[in-house]
Length: 87
Image (cartoon, rainbow, N blue to C red; front, side, top):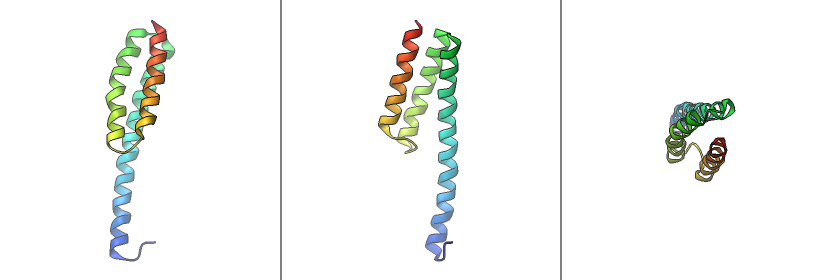
């Protein structure tokens, strides 16, 4: 357990950051799941709309430090390729 005032404050900050990052990650996963569901249903228009909505959310995760730039780029690339095959 933290002993010094500085380490106590750090522990509090870490808890807050953890909660914020967890919420952000969850939000990104929700957007990705919506794209996955649209692809699974075979609805090309819905998939494109969902992908368009997920893209800025993914990039926001990168700028906020929740995920690595290449991870987001890889996810976007794979999803867009799958949406493209729908039609």
